[in-house]
Length: 152
Image 1 (tube, rainbow, N blue to C red):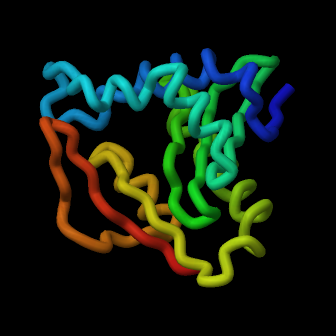
Image 2: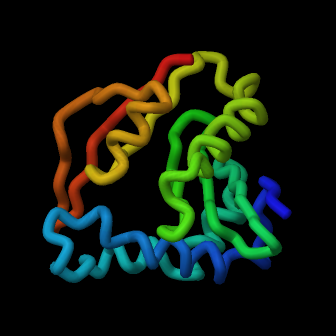
């Protein structure tokens, strides 16, 4: 059975593992190690802080009670995380999460402008959603990201 639901604190360990397993896609050099500051953002404590912060909303995509996708948005306008288990990528699950979030949160974002700092790997996916580059590629200690925005 497949479903999208609001994530709970009980999901944090599974979410942290999912995001950590895909974090290498942020690296410019796939063989490099993640910088310490980035690893800290993936810790259980950091996820817990974001879950307790009312500015963040979280969704999970489950198949047969296994979390295969995670979505987080900050202040209803900045897409903070969108990750899909590598075994389920390319099958539309990220799009389902994004469209579900738009349906849930659209009325909370009066500007109808969404932003994301995409990994270079995910830029084509965000372009399919309707995002466009909104600035030059950024880089910090081997982590590369592309600022993007979308107007709905």
